[in-house]
Image (cartoon, rainbow, N blue to C red; front, side, top):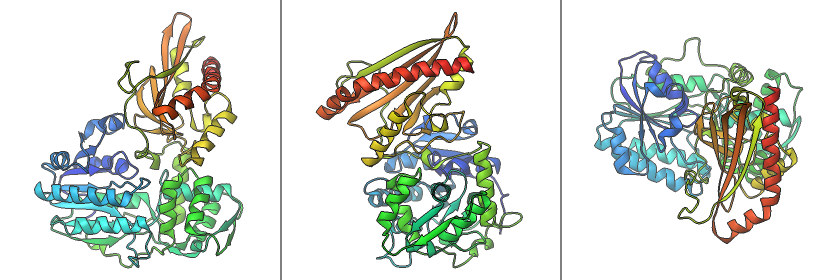
Length: 492
């Protein structure tokens, strides 16, 4: 039995741009392990504080050759990838698991560690999300590489999708009409306890090939979780009225409307809550000791998460994982690019303030600060995006002041950031084409100069019609945005 200490290992972390992987990698480094991170785009890990201490390799777990190269020389591999929210995610996850398991076996990996979900009680009645997680666990366990699967239900931590869903439902709805599943029992676990167990498995000797249930000390219904969240957050007592007529599908639509979690992710999460999720054993303690002081109770986990949010110290956020429906191509630099025409809208403002003041405003756009132009127009665009199955404006941002490449800002993703000079955002809203918003800070004898450029690459006739329809309003909104950013910098 071991705790967090142990001999140094060469470990691979997949999903390092995601919620758990982005927290696990620096803790493995802290524990003395040599960490290699697998990612499809290395730039997305360029700005994280621990990047210089890790080896970053580009690979795709659906590609056997690149996955084998990433696994070369690795002793312990953490499998933390999934395609939840993508159409046909079960098939994608199945193929990825087979590819990864086969590559790990061929490269002589000694252990795979997988973070899965609760074991479904009935294979035919389980949600697609739980079925898929269970299938991935079976594929890895039967791969010939000893595999440890940690089965966790709801993870409580600042920025997790499950916690954000709980937080926004409770804070925004003092009276809730809820489906019957709010009475199902759940055993939530604090994110720091999940990370403790994950790190511990890098040092456990011998071959272990099985799953372990992990959960905190409290077994609660979802209704009790909302009531206790309200108490910890200092909110008035919430009134919860369960009804029989709300199906999981209708529930997920409601969750998608009220919380920042988009419907494509909310639906499988809600469907999973229909099943009870409690631990049936605590065998993991035979191999990895519990954290010093014991597992965090639910109320303490909520308090710590809210403290992180209040102090703007959210380490990773559920939205940092790629939005799989979004384009990934970089901004075209040639006006006559092979894909056709580009529509460009540009605005420049002289600012009677130093570049540092202007950058402070630019790097703080979105989230609670908004977009420095018509709130009504931006809200309407967000609602329109949601109506067509997009993510809308509700993701906000991880940090109110600092941005990293690969992070999300409302319905944009940071494609490039050069502190003090450039912020380029790529649209992840539903569009008949691809769009970017670029903001530059330049020196000027009178202070500084702000340059703003929005670029749209249409797709087919629908894309051209879309731009021509919205161009007049678009130009007004973005011109207003440029002026207001300049004025805000002068006030700074």
